[in-house]
Figure (cartoon, rainbow, N blue to C red):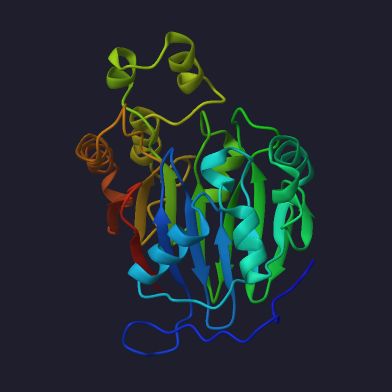
Length: 291
């Protein structure tokens, strides 16, 4: 695997101290997704759903006018995750980490000129663990209607970040990967009632609700409410939980928050969640989360 070292990076907190780990969510939703994860020496962009100009604008809005990244991780080929990939890869001279199936589908759909802008292509496999600089990354399969979709955990300096969106349900292996997360970014895409009466055609509603569609507020709430040592649900260890990839047509930030808060309030007394709950936006960057 290609490792960091193409250029020097020193990441600092707003107060100027060298950081151990920082996460900036540039945006999350059906029109674009991107998250920057960085240590003092390594930067990784997870998904590239915004064009170059918008990506740089959102980074600057979070106080991160950066000179490059050491790798771009791609979860799947849908446009809200790859729209800016080619130009960002060329601009930063950044390698792209992508599964073989996802790259094949991306290459089939994208113009040839876009493919030629990509720098180094690093093929990754689901369940593979690898490192970019001092960030250890695990890719794992998720159930979504894409060629070979994956989600990621990223670990550095004893902290763990999980970024899991675009999946129809939470199978056992996904739940296992989420355990021990310090920052959990988890899809809470739609409210079932809003989706059912919303503007989408019925076949699209069926797709969204399917086991290869998107997680509903209800599904996320059931996961967050589960607790205890024998449970496969949320282990409540996270300092932050971020609800992400909310539908602008079939969800509402207040509805998603209330659903999650109610679920967290149902947790067993011995497994109370003491962290913070946040909602990621399609339009406004969120963060930084500094470890």
